[in-house]
Image (cartoon, rainbow, N blue to C red; front, side):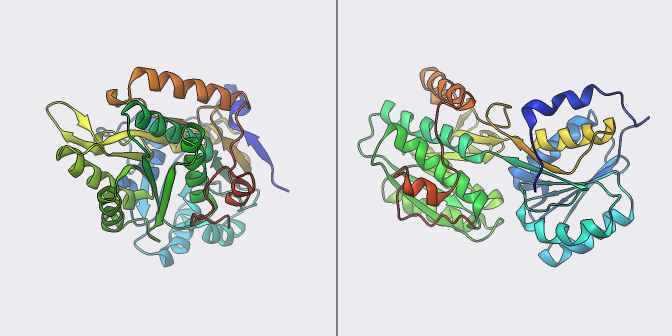
Length: 360
């Protein structure tokens, strides 16, 4: 049986006196997109930097206290996990469900090694902490924001798109949360989806986004790692040409990636669904340092600020930001029902029935 801990209630762990005289060592293992994905992996890396007092500009302890290895191909996942384990890092972090099978095989071979896997709750080993997020909550918020912006702009029958990487339970939480948020404001709105089946092919997302924008799409939400940058690039082109279209970022605040007018700091990224992977990596490192690290599932939700939305783009508008923040408070208080599974959302008639989302 899984042991689940809500991040909100577990922060007191870190008041315990540190059992480490110095900071623990950590290695981050990622897929081929590495920390340059400007999304999920980048967020996990920021949490590590924060723990050591470093920044993206100043990584003074890289190579001594912490480092990163990106796997060029999936067949490197197990070797990379074993190599890091043999080198006896105090904590090994793997990002994404693609590492689940590999870690499930390796973790029992190194029972004394501590592991964190982010975005997975299926590796039920006593030495594996599993960080999960209520992506459906954060995605609901950006869906609400996009729909409210369309109303404020006076767009008639606005169209919305969702671009994912590989269909599965996590991607589904992004998509169905987004759709439910849109439909809570604009019942019956047109929503389409596309899956690139890859985390690192921005050209695929870019081509689909351009096709949708040409067909009248107003806003596209991409939750696809580096692949999603293609949709943001397309939105930049269209906004620079005077078209009223938007992109929504995922995992990290992607406002900067959407800037198309440097002088006026105008961005094509209306908002971003911020998933605090940095909170997860920071949480695990603090637990190791405090001697309170435990295997099991730790959930980062809206109540614990594990998921939220970015209000950085001034074109979103203060009135919309205030409304979305009110929705966030209602979600945290349990007053808004958001479905995480496509089957459940369809049964409740809360989303379109022709999406490509999968619950497995």
